[in-house]
Image 1: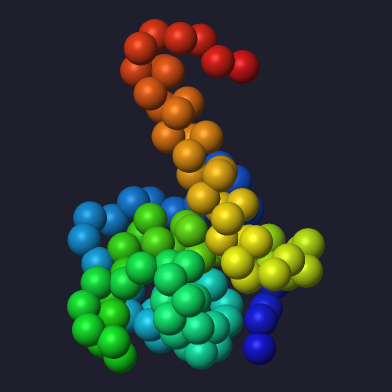
Image 2: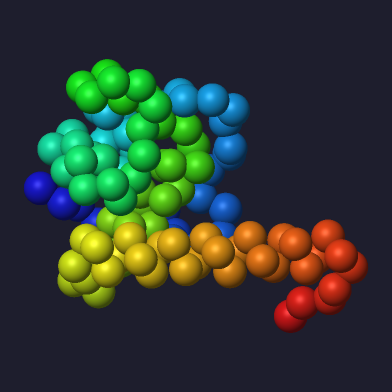
Length: 108
């Protein structure tokens, strides 16, 4: 059962923790969904986990990605693959903005 995300889908969602810190169950709890949702996303290649199937581990960056995807799925009733593509684009824009800032470019 998908539950609406309580954390915002943009801006800082969580403190970044080095390394894989979440199990499937912990990631599901952090997103407010059932573990089956996480498993489905990993099997579809939408989110990536470290380790073998069934014992995947996830980092905080994956938590942010999963929350974004879930937000798009629930708020906009988006198809999971479309939500993942949209999340890819959001992440790419954020990456490009970081690069521009590192070069000293002022952004709005």
